[in-house]
Structures are given as structure tokens and as C-alpha cells.
Length: 236
Image 1 (cartoon, rainbow, N blue to C red):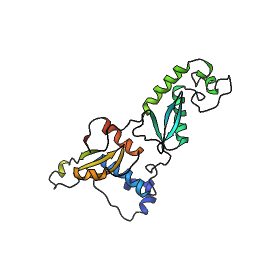
Image 2 (tube, rainbow, N blue to C red):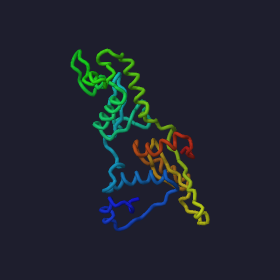
Image 3 (cartoon, rainbow, N blue to C red):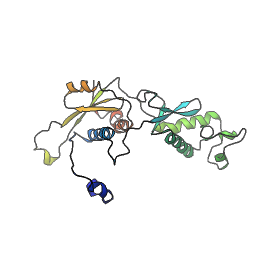
Image 4 (tube, helix red, strand yellow):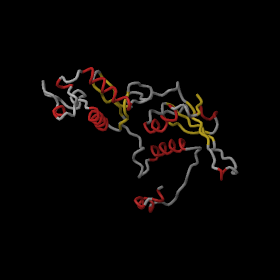
């Protein structure tokens, strides 16, 4: 795709060499790409760099609060919603939820209300009116919980590290080619974090000792294949 995109001509003019690493399939390729970007900090790849302010929303009484991955283990903590790269992004995410579901900025702690006065959005019918008694606190809280469900972070569903087995399926034209050592890979994962890939199960145990925290990109890549139950998994 890069070689066909005129908008990236400047990047292409700076290219002197192109190399590749073979993987058994798309999951391995996506995990490796995200890992290498965090490791090497390439100039043109910004989105997959590690965020030092990774945060989420968690209910504290009637209001959501912002919590950080440096303080709690996102992979095992339940009741977390959304993944955001900064406090400001988390606040913007909460405003978006409020706008979509007519929730009150004041009740969510996004703005300070004057005593005995409703919020400005209630007068514009953009808030359902919990701030002026049009709905109960319980009803507002329940609507907030319902709105947050789509953003809920799934906890790591295994007791420890696992190996996700990915097998290369050759095209018909490649069926006569000799087998390649990377036709089968075991991707070693723990707490939604990619620890590396091996070709033999015996090697996987060595990667399980690698220290790693929660990785938002690994979570986004792995959530669907792991939670759907379609992936071939071994416990390590």
C-alpha cells in the first residue's frame, strides 16, 4: 500500500532498503508490528507508540473517575471502561457519551453547577434533566452504566500466560513449495501483552518470564480472536 500512495512520496524518497519478517498469519504480523514500533520509535508511525498516560474510566459512587494503567493492572481489574491515551482524551470520551445519551455534565463531574440551578444543556434539551429533577439519580446512573457497557475492558480470561497457535495456510499456487519453519508459530501472550513468537512449545516457557504490562494495542488485536473462542490456544 505504501508503494502505491502518492501522498507518501516524501517517505518513499527517504527509503534505501526494504526488508521483511515472515509470520504465520495476520495476528502475528499485527502483534510484531505493534511491538517493533514501540521498540524502535520509527518517524512515521505515531499511533502504535506506547502511551505513558494510558487511562480508563471507573465508577466511583455515581461518577466516573479516570484511572491510570501505571497505578492498577488493567488486564485483571474489572469495571474499567474505555482505553484513552491521556486524561484529556478520557474527559472528551466521557463528554461524547454524555452527548449521545443526554447525560448531565454536572452529574458526571464534567462541569460545576451553581447551587439550585440546572445545567445549561438541560435548557437546550441536550440533558435529560437529572440536574433539575426531571429524572432520578438512579435512572441517570442506570443510563450511564448502559452507555458504558460498549466500552467495557475485558479482563484477561486465563490464569497466566498462553500460546496462541497460528498456522500458515498456503495458496493453491504455493502448495508445492517446501514447508517453512514459520508456517506454524506460537505467539506467547500474557495480560493482553505480546511477549514474542516461537516455533516450538518448549521455547514458549522462556518468553513467559519476560516482564510486560498491559498493552492497549495488544488488547485491540487480541480481543476478538481470544474472546470468540475460535483461536487455537495452549496454556503455559
